[in-house]
Length: 287
Image (cartoon, rainbow, N blue to C red; front, side, top):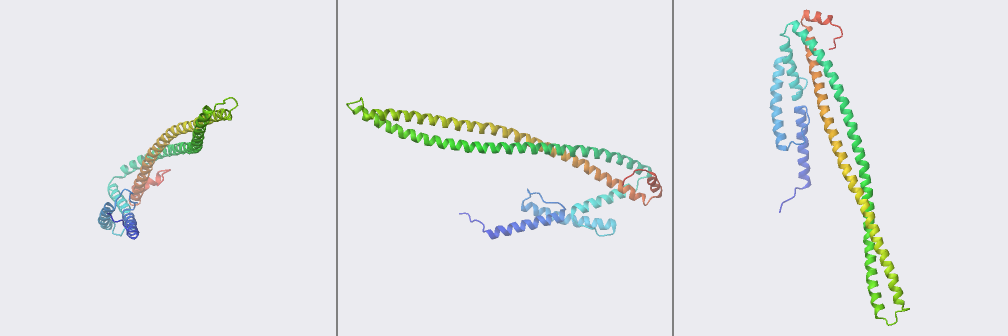
C-alpha cells in the first residue's frame, strides 16, 4: 500500500519550488518555464550562479565598476554592448557614418514591418475572438437542446410505462370478454374498446416524444459539427496571430539592436572630433 504524502509535506514542497522559481528569476532575469521540473530548475540555478559570477568579473574588468544589476539578462546585454563599442571605435569615421545611414534605413524599414505585423495581430485576434464568440453562442444552443432532448426522453419513458400498463389491462379485458357468454351489451366489450383507444393514443404519444427528442438530438449534432469547424477557424486565427506577433517582435528587436548601434556611434562621436562634427551636420538624426 502506497503512503499518501501528508498536506504539510506537500505544502513544504510547493513553497520550496516557489522559492526556487523566484531565485531562478533573480539570477536569469526571466521567468522559468512551467515545463522545468525541480531537478532541472536546480541545475539551471547553479549554472546561472556560476555564469553570473563570471560575467560580473568580466564586466568589472572591462569597466572598472560593479554592474548595476547582477542577473544574467542584464550582464550579457551590458557586456555585449561593451564589446560592440570596443569593436566599433576601431572603425574609421567614414565607416561609422555609412553604418549610421544604413542603420537609419533599416530602422525605418523595420518600423513599417512591425506596424504591418502588429496590424495583422489585431486582425487575427479580432477574427479569433469572433469565432470564439460564435462557439459560445452555439454551445448555448447545444445545452438548450440537450435539456429539450432530456425532457422528451423522460416523457418517452413515462409514455412507454403507461403503454405497458394499458397492454396488461387490455390483455386482461380481452380475456374477460372472451370468457363471457353474452357479448352483445357486455361491459367488458366497452372496456376493451376504450383500452384499445387509449393504447393507440399512448403509442402515438411515444412516437411523438421520440420524434421530438430526435429533432433536438439532430440539432445537437448539427451544432456540434459547426462548433468543431468554428474552433478550427479560431485555432487557425490564433496560429496566424502568433506567427504575426513573432514577426512583429523580430522587427522590434531589430529596431532595438539598431538603436544600440546608433547610440554607440553617437557615443564614439563624443570622443572623436571629426565624427562629432559630421554628426552635428546631419539633419533629422534621431539617437
